Image (tube, rainbow, N blue to C red; front, top):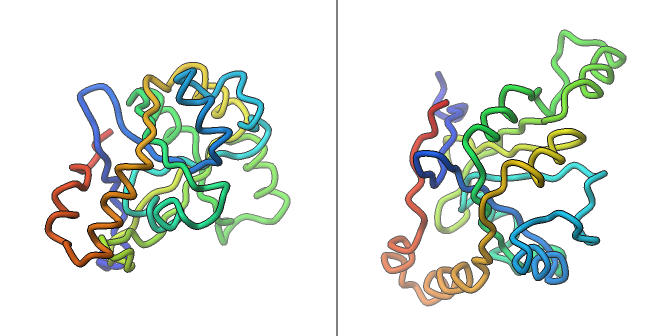
Length: 189
């Protein structure tokens, strides 16, 4: 396999949980933290696809360390059940249309499968692309409902932690910053 195409899920995890990351506005994040949930949060739209990311550094790349825009200024670490994560993987399809499917068949497939998988180059501490890929998981429909009602065990606001790491990098204290990175291990289903 070409090293540029390596697709392995790396994540912070315990025996029964896996951590995913999302970036949100302050309004949405405040309610999620208070309630330890996205349920009944008027800013969390269950009708939209929501993307979860197990790679910390890919989330930092996507959100610009929480400084990209006001809708991504708060970084949340969300511990979900491995059973839920596995359900998502087992009920997924690629976010890109397979070459062997017609547009109509692709549309039907997406209507019947509630999870999208996308692989993008993971990032290093400088947010430079790596040879291996990180997974992003898009949840829609029943998958979003399961995520907010059944899978989430804990939501932690890590925005200040993220800013601390970024400030160390900006001050060229790379080794100190690396020590603070989450210990992400290969995820085995």
